[in-house]
Length: 332
Image 1: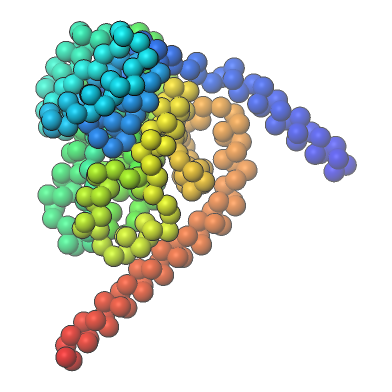
Image 2: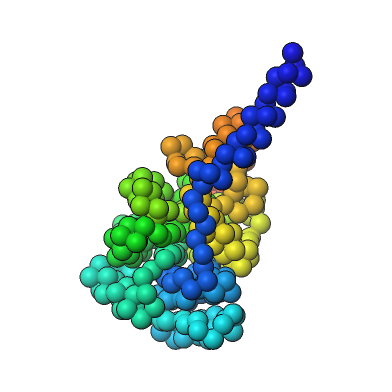
């Protein structure tokens, strides 16, 4: 009886693997495609642009700093695969004025054609205890991390639907899956991208347009180095429980998942576990993906409880150390 059940399970899984390609999106061909990358002058955004350029895409880089844009352009152009490829640079703040963002996207499309893939990588991180953060910090992060992705996406989505082809990528963070000490402002802005992505995917899927949400871990970028300067001790200790990734590694995975039309893009075993744990009502690209989430949920939840216990322990230890230091200062 057990052998029969095992055989049935194996046959069922094999059937799923055979059927999945039939319901999965057709991969997006990057050679000759027009890829727009916001926040593309450095870090993960620049590495994504390089990865797409290596595969034959035409690139539009969007960022605020003109000098960094030109420097990134030179670096990207070293990876061309043919003499027809172009890297276009546009300096604009994607979080401030929608009309301005819409105009620069139109300019890019007039020069390089309709946008086939948009990668929303513009973002920033500021950390601190909830009561220590200025209210303006919450407003700023929501503007840059959330509206800075809404505006470019709004500017390209109509054309993508009309053409029945397109990819929209939102670069969130593992802090957009799990709220952590010190990230009350940052996590909220990155969690918002998930809600936007789920709702948008339901709207555009019938038009063969697919949305990807990327959840990179701590990554060795200029932004991460800047973030570490003011990061609370608790946040830093929690972050140190996992390794720091290279931006090239993160970029390759994001591009791969976007091409395939995968809704989730995660890095490493921790990222895979978090994506399975937080899948909720998120769409799946294949039957096997959904089956894997169902099967692993209980185990991953058990592991997650140990992680949460460890994080709580870190916070308590820091609180006790701080209290001892305050007592020592008063008695000195």
